[in-house]
Length: 254
Image 1 (cartoon, rainbow, N blue to C red):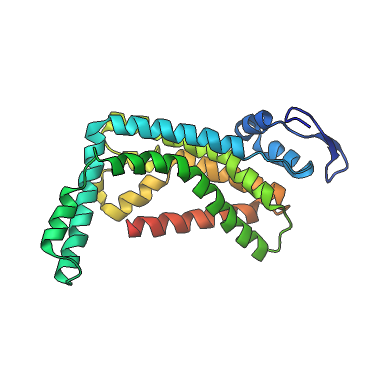
Image 2: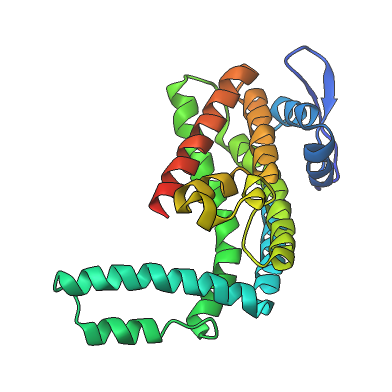
């Protein structure tokens, strides 16, 4: 049976519903996520996540390409990384974990034109969407199991995978904005402040409060509420609770 074939299935209200094509599921995430995930939950299981993840990879590669072409932006990011690494190397030298000569050589080897830097950038763009998909899905799996919800893990993958297009689109647009502003920032509160004015941690927190990230998590919350048959309030508490923990933890570890 091809992807374009529509199967009929009775939903939990006893009404006959048609199985969505992948294209309909993708467009539905943007136009009517509640109805889209209700249909996915009420029809035979189908892999909706693979094509959206491939689209996310394409968007991430485009964002990485734009970043790599902007030498000023790349140098700005590299300079910040060198400062952090220099502080860490100084600490290692004082503790006897490495020599000063090794530390200096390591810093000299860090370059935006290095093969490693290019591979890390484009490799991250390819692997990142898959890593995020499975990591988030497993976290939601564990929390939903603790909440004793009944669901199919394949549909958790569908929810996260379909919703990921929103986050990846936001990532591409954020890169365009970053090129114009001359500093890496999401489309959110981080645009209103400068790191030197409010501090590294606070700026990191505000930068992660991004319009597209919030949209992504709202859609994920809607999807999980449908496929796990839990209330929207419970689903939102799970999704945004994890999101807030991530923001705080990643910002203070930055």
